[in-house]
Image 1 (cartoon, helix red, strand yellow):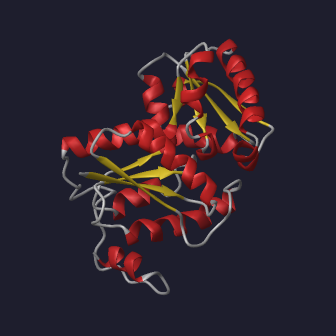
Image 2 (tube, rainbow, N blue to C red; image 1 turned 90 degrees about the horizontal axis):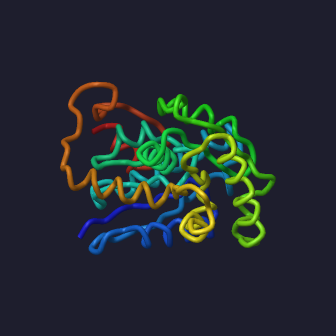
Image 3 (cartoon, one colour; image 1 turned 180 degrees about the vertical axis):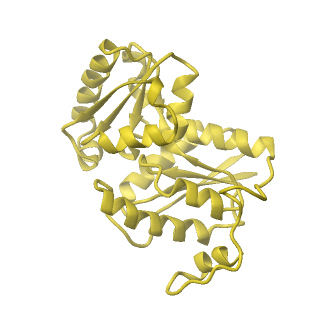
Length: 244
């Protein structure tokens, strides 16, 4: 059985549950989804400072599961600590927004991304993933992740309006960016004029594919595993990954 850790990077259990449901709906038979929430950090990541804090919490959470899962899905739309997680973990690590954007590139020429709140950090994230040339536009809705959990019908209506604006701007596919929107693409897909990409669903399927490919860990380059690194005050599991 393949075990995939679906790791939330904030401390809101309701978002962890949403992501777990979307992951299980996408997973192949025989894939076991293990959802997890960090022990400390922001309730919801909505700033650069919170994202950095969440990165530490997320790496500690992953370290606790190192060697116990075959893949990791980062259930955080900022793809928080993605490169660091890939260096530390002995298994494939997939970021939900990277996975959705890469998949969007396979179903259309250009894609749009819709999220809750501000969009500039997503513009930067897409640039880091090397996909700016394929981005047609960004849409930030005046709603919060808490709104999506508490009032899903109202937020879904706003999402459909935002999708329409992105399509008018040239999007052939739309990424729903945000862990709080997990599972919404499947519900709204029949009412949308272009394919909708759910980051959790895309990440689970790509994680399954990477496990199936059986690629070895790099022995060189910037993501080669660490060894002999000293630290102070980290959790025992995270300190152990740094020591190698």
